[in-house]
Amino acid sequence: MDFHLVMKFGGAGLADGDSVLRAARIVEDHAHRRPIVVVSAHEGVTRALEACARGAASGRAGLDALRIRHKGLLRQLGLEPELVDRQLTELGEVLANLATKHVLLAEELDFVLSFGERISARIVAACLRRLGVEATPVDAFDLGLTTDSCHGRARPLPGVEVRLRESLRGIPGIPVVTGFLAKDGSGNLTTLGRNGTDLTAALVAHAVSAERLIFWKDVPGILTAHPELVPEARVIHRLSLFEASELAFHGAEVLHPRSLDPALSADVILEVRSGDSPKRPGTTIHGGEPSRGPVAITGAGELAGLEVEGGGGPAMGTLFALLHAHHVSPRFLIPSSTGMRVFAPPCPGLESVADELRDLSRLIPSLASVVCIGAAQAETGPSALGALEAAGVHPKHTIFGGPLANRAFLVDPADRGLATRALHECLHGARTRVQPSR
Image (cartoon, rainbow, N blue to C red; front, side, top):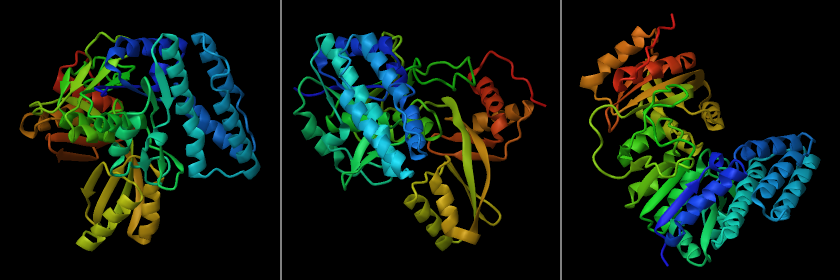
């Protein structure tokens, strides 16, 4: 039987027993289509595992809180209390070893973090079986998901789809696959970075030529702005792949920036829907022409900055080679009077680039970005800038361009919320009045 549907559940949708059961019932409703399920760790577990790893490396190996958390989940779901004892015992041994070494390597941190998804997949699969749905937990790295060796933000290697497809065919029932996890060519466990489960789900969907990939989230869909910054933000019911890709690239946290790449090369319909309200349609993402005019306001709360001297071709060639080598994904490249300014999400790689360039570069203060996706220059550029100035926000940089005629503003991080609300009111007709900050 072919797989036509992939369903991804994030940590917030698996936070407690009620959430796991709700997710399992959603899968049960689609069991006749034999979906592939991709899961994250239960909410908060990845952070707790990182704290355990760092604590162990400092000589404090403690697992009690995580053991109690998972045992409580099993009790809430009426599952066997020994279901994940094997994983918890192995985790305890790893932490004890770290406590004797007093050193935490990047590959060791990845290994510790892996227990979140590995345990989650086994709990979700067991919950499905208790509902009468045949399900098999499986680790993505055992399916052939292979990456480079950049621990913490690994990149999948070409050709992984073929191995995934062949491996999934042999899994009985509904495969419940660990998101976020992979292995490098030497067999070392790696992780795919923040929201990496989205990327796992997209790779799986591409591999099996699924017709549809549903991201079950704790939001009703993709919104016109972050709801914590703009309570009046509205659901966008339809987006083109290019619009969704631009939103993800510029900081929208709903989707992993690379999770849309497989969909761009395969005819997969994506949906972002609420696990709390599974009957609501949410946001559908599929091909098509981009909208004309503003789509949404997004951005990043912090972009680290690097200024590089020299504007010639060789200097820029060296810069781009170093950025790629250190897995730095520039969000903005802005010419300066002496060379180039690079703004990217904070990561160790940017400091490594600065170290290699030595006297030719310097780290500069971080800024926040506020980006109007799809804002045509002739229609909204001046009014957007005017809205910011009226609200008392003075951008450090203004950038116009991109395939969707985006308008981006780099502002002081303290002004990000005010700037987002001002632009949303200007471009999307928010009802609240934005007051100047000064």
